[in-house]
Length: 273
Image (tube, rainbow, N blue to C red; front, side, top):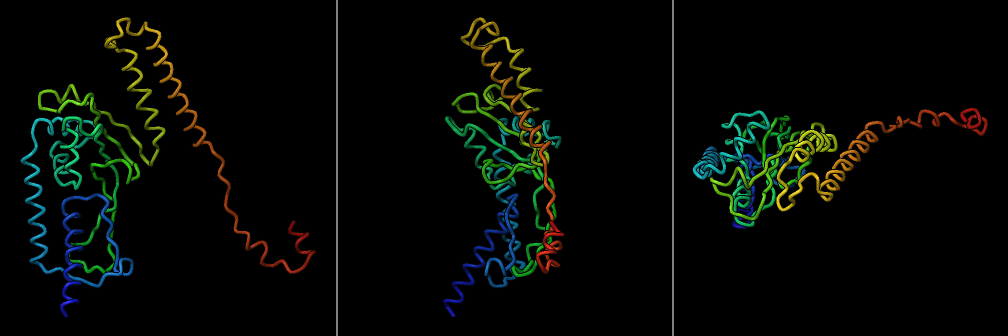
């Protein structure tokens, strides 16, 4: 009995962790039936579910209290770039299980980039009281979430922040030290999104740049000209690659069984040939 109690407690703990992650907004938390996970059926009590919801609410409010001018700068850029309200962006951020990456981005010599995806993700439709062996109804829903960029496929919009130096990001220098960009990768068209971002935004901005730091001649400098030529050439390569992929020949799959099932003798094979 004690052994069973310990095992049940472990299952409850695992299930509780999954539910907390779901409540706090993990965008891609898989929900698998018992036949896949091998877990026994467990129905959480209403008290347990209320406690999980309470913990999630406390976590969100603690994060909301952390939001200062640095966070507000990121939120305003995301809202403008993606087309959401600042309230929607704030709610998405404080509900994200990777919320701590923002603070790591602000830290001195911190993360060099901070990525956000805004795209359709599979959301669990059922309520938290669902037994683990019951099938779950899921639906695609637009969601803004923080990502490292290495675990989720990009199928929508990618928004990114890049640090200009290793300085600590403060409320007073955020607009100077943090660069923001966005590109549309709808339906996974990464090449098209990158090509548009470079050709329509970055290249025109670079060619109109007057201050090149220590390079006094600016655009007249041969190294600057070589750099801009290389960028133009890279954009051209992206365009050619995208067109080649779009114009590729796709061979229709043929069900050969219907052709060979009635072949009985050599003459049938000759006729078929």
